[in-house]
Image 1 (cartoon, rainbow, N blue to C red):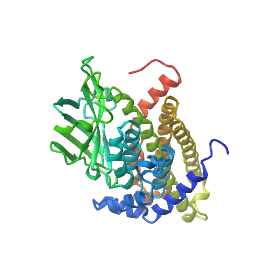
Image 2: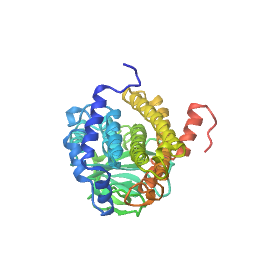
Image 3: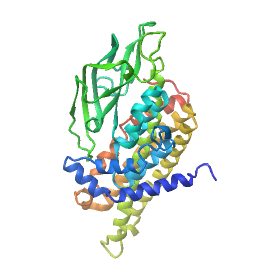
Length: 394
């Protein structure tokens, strides 16, 4: 079998997820969003079918697959009009970090709930004054006897209202060097001093964004992901490694989110272009309509291939090569989605900006892929430096 061809198991997984998502569909998803309701029914159906934790080891309730499998789930949900942002966050980022770096007791405590949907986990790194520069985060964690005390703020944190816990990136002082090093903590969303407020967004999604306030939140010693480093008396020295372990899966999932959106938009536009007749023939027979859709489809298929390559490299443990591929995949997928949704709206003409046809609502969702979880400009910086060997520009 050629290396660029997905396995029969992955292809069957895609088909099963698509069938499940079709029972809900875009109209159901948008109705939930506009009514301020959640997509919990779909989330629990995914969990019940075993797709939510497909990338998590079997001994913790998962499917034992790789990041490529959970990315396929994410893409197929989006392709059916039900893009779930928490698929990126809970099983992919948090699940990967905890499965790779937590203690055995922590894995037993947190991973089964991620898999069965009963203990969804959010991820908090972005801060109001740090943004893209995660080295500038100011949320701190200090030891106080047997406890950790966290203090700081986070912004644009997805789905906190749906999560039982949040994986928070903070900084602790290394007693040996005096420097603040990144560490990851699992924080219950109902902890005293942990508060969050929704950020009004234009995006049509049941999953909300939040500003998070962490005001002297006290946590037990084992809230720190992994073992404490006995040589420093502070957080685990591998905190930076833990953090970056979640970034490649995050980019791959974001790419799959975008390519799924693009597929949904192109499917809707193609159907409309085959059926809509203005002059003597369906509008899809005109190259002004057909060519933009064809170009967007080509772009999207190329992005899907790069996403599969990135996932294969992550699953093979080739982290350095995966970093390049994951960034490229995320960039290509976001561009493809923006072009696909724009072409789909244009294909629909005036109908493209009505609520009835559901096209315009995807414009913001697709556009967000150019910004989050990392901006396209920072990806271009990465590729310029690491792929082309050019000087650092920032």
